Image (cartoon, rainbow, N blue to C red; front, side, top):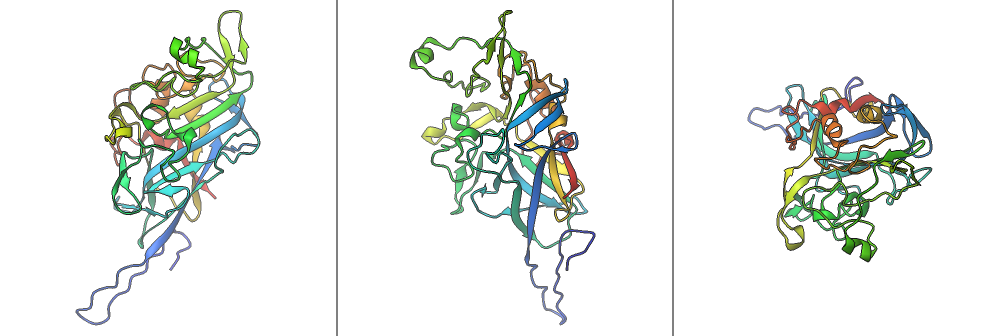
Length: 346
């Protein structure tokens, strides 16, 4: 029976006769809602974001998506019960894609929007939520067999792992988080290094894949202005978080192992999915950055270990330069990323 102040129905059938076991509890449906905000103000594709970053610049949202895995509800004793996600176009192998890009306004999405995670847990009393931002290396496919998830061919992968814009060309890895904003006035940055002659001759928009640093592997922004001091101005600041330092060729069936998986555990000690939702606060994430000026590497951070902007990104997610959280290691990482995800009423 649903309690007004709490969220999970607990149904227990107690046998009246001695020697008769209690009937197993029925699964309980769970729906977790996510939202996007900046300093308490809702963020969407159709409106400017006001006062973003260290320089408090107005900006337009271009893209905002992230993968969620290992979602679980937590009881009063701290025990985490995994949520078995419902299989659909947004969820596969207990991995869900949360996507705020609805292809309207300033956004340029490809699939549509999804802000909900759905599944079921055994009936019980729960008071918290945990999940991991990222895609596991392996999981169970629809037939129960082990499958590669993070590093796989997006062209043949089941939805929602089939989105090219959420994949890196290098080693077929996934972008766990993809956030792109266009600040007013653009971003002044050092000029991009010249492309290798072979890539330039081929007219490729991207340099060749690199095995250890993806920061330049996918998108080389075209300048909207070349400046007199040799810098250039580009339009979009990007944050792409994913695994780096990876070895193994997924094309030949090898299991890819990464020195820095960059999966981010999040634990919310108190959460009621009936009345509340999880909000990613962009201002908390982007507060360290002057969004009108980039120091080099990718424009923003594409998880490159030497990118000047990535150290602050890793800090915000609770990922040290050499430390990378694994699923279920929220307590070990100090749950730093929970500061980015706030709980608010629906």
